[in-house]
Image 1: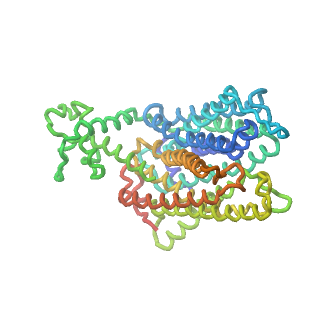
Image 2 (image 1 turned 30 degrees about the vertical axis):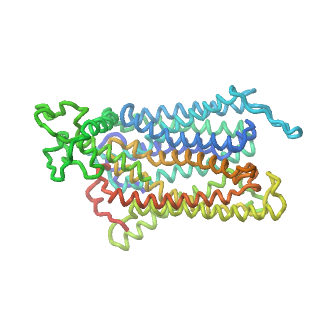
Image 3 (image 1 turned 180 degrees about the vertical axis):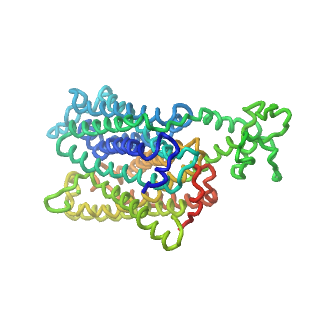
Length: 548
């Protein structure tokens, strides 16, 4: 839990009192966004008469944009507008998008007429009907990008005790419990909101998330007078670009193995006087070849486009290196199909609490000093759980398809197979553990390895991986669908899952997941030890911690 370090605060602003508002803002936003997601494919297929593949691709792109735009927001927040303004912009934009999406359920003519099942006639949505829908998705992604780009880093910023340091233990607990509350909000979304959509219809079901988003915005702005609002580092993006330009201009400069501090340009009071040996070609950007010509009398670069500081070079290196790492429980109670993800989120939440409040204290007591699992180990375990989850899904799908064929219902798309949906639990539990190990581990890794001036970027890099994953998933799905349909075959992933071979598709994803784990091992070896050289300043006493 976050306790003593937050209470000893020399800064009149920030501290523990601001964290509930920041976490509530992100938790409500996540609840609203996640509340739309589970049943969105049903909404697109039933209300807009879309094919399953087309609707799935729209959701893939929407999800990819939602995960990618936080990177853009983080760059703008860290470089130009600041984190407070970026979150405020995100609140307004996301709320506007949700209200617009809600309006598609209310306004007459916003959707095509329902399909005529007797004549098997379905009228496709017109461009004028699709535009508000797509615009709503875009606004929601843009708004979520604004909030998620800065929320985690903005909260960590409030833990600054006024002397430029943060308690490492408090920061790690903040990261973990931040995800607990966000996960709890997702649980409410995939249960309560999905239940409302299934039982009260789309008008009420889409109106509730919009109201929750309004609460998200209000919770954030209520504590505005108490926030620590750091200024943006306006030189960040130009500085990174300057390194690339200077490296190219000095590409013919030869690097020496016997370099000295005088050979490199560094800012006054810099803690780093020489660049690291990683990505050595970038070191050419800060090499001083002719001091009289390259430097002014006060020690600045005569031509900034040809000479950078060591700090600028190392910031770019850190960014480059970080980016490469990669429904019946009882006869009378039926879980809504969109609510099954609750089990993954519950697993994530339970594991975080168990790990932070039971396992780590026990391990520390046994060793006689504070300890924790290394970030590399946690991320690797998460990838293995991800692979195991896809294996479980493939096995269950093969059994489900076999039962459907044996029962003679393979031609009925809406038929219910006599197999408990709780067989999905192994997949969902393993997925939850994968998120608990890998997602939080990634966030801590990026935050501690990148410069403090790039905290917002660091907190969103894991989202960049999710964005790329959604785009790749769309490409893989389209490729598999196209290849397996050749020769007049039905394909692996048709609309009627009983006619396809979704189990083959999941086995393919299992193989790709294992390949991803092997790639992670190669990245770990290439990266070397985690040094936390650009992380937030911590108390010296935290240096006593070691790996369990």
